[in-house]
Length: 139
Image (cartoon, rainbow, N blue to C red; front, side, top):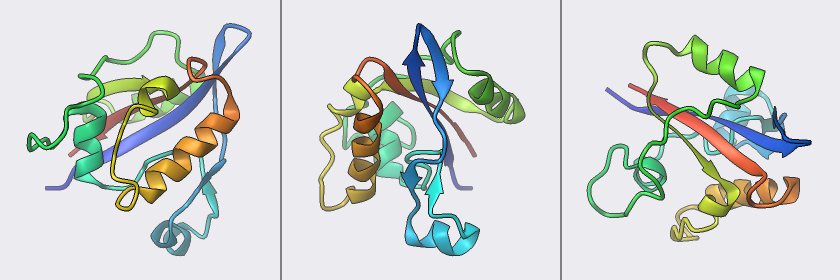
């Protein structure tokens, strides 16, 4: 059975977290499948090396996770909360990482070009502590 990630980018404005819209470029497979050029879900492809680095999910001891799963932030946007509720009770390893956290990812650029492309988009949205990605996994 495979494992998938579900991600939602948020930006803090005036003290409240807002869901980020479709600003992340899709990959070739997603463009072909959905017809969409952009998505609101960064890092939404299945990559177990990335999952291991983000939260220790599907870990093989190759990379230290940026953080152990932190749970769902209490102050998430309504859109993110609704999406999360849709995945209950199947969501697991629920967490979030700030842009500051993601900038420490240190993944091989050649193998993770899409990851870094999405990080650049996140950087264009705001300060590292005012941008985050909330995520969970399902099997």
